[in-house]
Length: 420
Figure 1 (tube, rainbow, N blue to C red):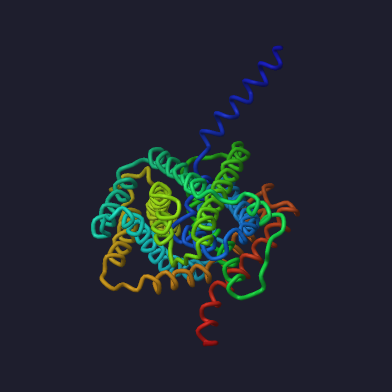
Figure 2 (cartoon, rainbow, N blue to C red):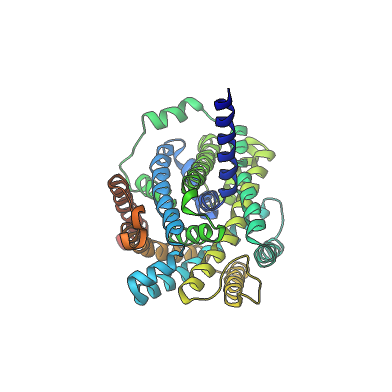
């Protein structure tokens, strides 16, 4: 009897520790469902119905493998990824990565503000109102908040992303077809289908996510004795990412694809759902896009400010006051401001900006992942916490696949233009 009571107490204590650790993994995984990700999932559902749901399985594996290594490096070394890359690969490699990341992150931040504008457009609110208000809220959240308060808000955002479940259920999907898409995938060998597969798996991991994840683990103060809890934090984050993606695809497959409606972006999907699944489904979809875009519009500039300050030895962190980390907050503010200007600029080529940022992401991802893999296997850096043989096999296979997909994502549009 006493032993049972002690076991219950032990499990309860472990659960409390897990709740205290919760944050970096869930936030990093959830922010993967940004405006660009939601657009990709919406297009997949609208164009191919349930056919591409099977791709979420390899996407989950890829995300889990990379994020686990990232969290482990941060916990063991107590250094940010930018710090480690500079120390182990030199200033030139670091400089190349940073220039590309800054350009990509500015473009990505602009895309997130475009998501805010598009989602609020469904509610008939002009972008000249929604975008400036969104930017001000983002700025105050980070500059005036503490890490604990900001993290709590981010975790609430992560939960709100699950609203896509409601949107999908209101669309009355065909569960038999959904089950069949996983058991017997209908794979087509044509460039459009394969391009969408590449987009779905490739959108799972972005270079900036790795820098944010490692910085968040350090700022939260997670120690190696709590690593097992952080692993489950990462696992939950990856599950949330894939669950949200699943229900976005399902919502669009059950309505848009079923009725032969084509879309170009997530905003189109939200608007098109209204006559098919009702105003509530449309509004919930738009709300999810708003939350995801606001979430990512905060994290992207924050991650950029983190890794640049880490690399150059400047003070950085949400817990720091404005006068304690001026460079950090100036960078954060500048990226937000540039993103807002791009969105509000009349006739700004948003598609071109988004495309260029994806090219830079594509160029940088292989470099960042290879650097990570080499460092996580270096005993001088990781001690006894280097990868096991199994983790290395899974890690390298995942990275080779991701690099291959990224190269295809980057060159496919260029090849299309050349062939035309």
